[in-house]
Length: 396
Ligand SMILES: Cc1cc2nc3c(=O)[nH]c(=O)nc-3n(C[C@H](O)[C@H](O)[C@H](O)COP(=O)(O)O)c2cc1C
Image (cartoon, rainbow, N blue to C red; front, side, top):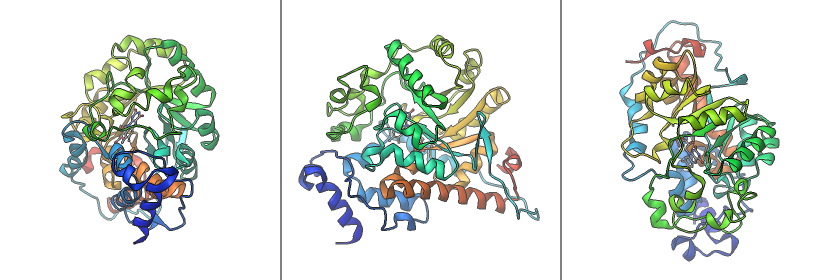
């Protein structure tokens, strides 16, 4: 048995579950005996990190992380679209000293690649969101914490040195939403990413087929205090679409952002925009930023690739709002294209989960370092010293 099948075997037998159960679709948390000492960190790129993660994760967890909605055409498009844009690099520029740092909502980061909010980090590793937060701090970047975290906001805040963003689903129960916002901001959240592409959950058929559910002992822990049934509701085994339907609000409208802006001073970013006219509407609803995103292809299938809709949105609101982008970034060149198109920074979802599953905190640091170093090299090879040198002139 090679090292990885051994690890996978240990993982599948952890917590009393057998391999047979796992193959029948039982999800489970990664084992607490997990060791990151066997250097998954040899991965040369994000694709190799994903392969390591795949070997270590139960099928249900891997499928949950990797899947997209319906035919997964948007999931694929997010990746493939980058290839259409070629980088017309410049030569004979002194690029000896380079600086990738930038400032987002007043917070300086060493490079413009931030961590997108993703749910249930303890499915990947027992240290869960704490490992991710510590990796963000060690890497000098920022983590966005999902509402569907498996770790308390207050604990993540400590691990993140109080520098994190909080992702919010506005719940039907506005009192509950207000309390959650209050907790996140009291814990130091520096921005609220309000996800607006989820009036309902997209249908991810792999999760439905697997009967996706959280293993015993894991829950969307931040949602429990005002809803004591939170654990049970997250465990119906019917896939995320059914299990967490109760936490969305299909009636959500622009005016609800006005309400949100009235209860918090923290910058609000709307996450999940793909149209310039929607970005323009945001201007009159107390919003400070727009995250161009299609939820990593997990919501509306057949939605366009994010890189393809970024430029019109930057043109519409870029001088008034902070424009961010996520979706399919697996190489430094992908990030470079989005930055050249006008994004202030980009976010990555799955690469962080692959790093976390492959090696806990060092694995997440590895994922971030791979992307940072690739971006740095790509900039050097293109005659760019700082992010200001990245502009559309580089892309054709
Ligand atoms: C497993 C998984 C869970 C996610 N959970 C959330 C979430 O809780 N809230 C949210 O706004 N977006 C969520 N997203 C979307 C990410 O924030 C982000 O938009 C997407 O992952 C970016 O694409 P990428 O994975 O190709 O980098 C999730 C994505 C994945 C893959």
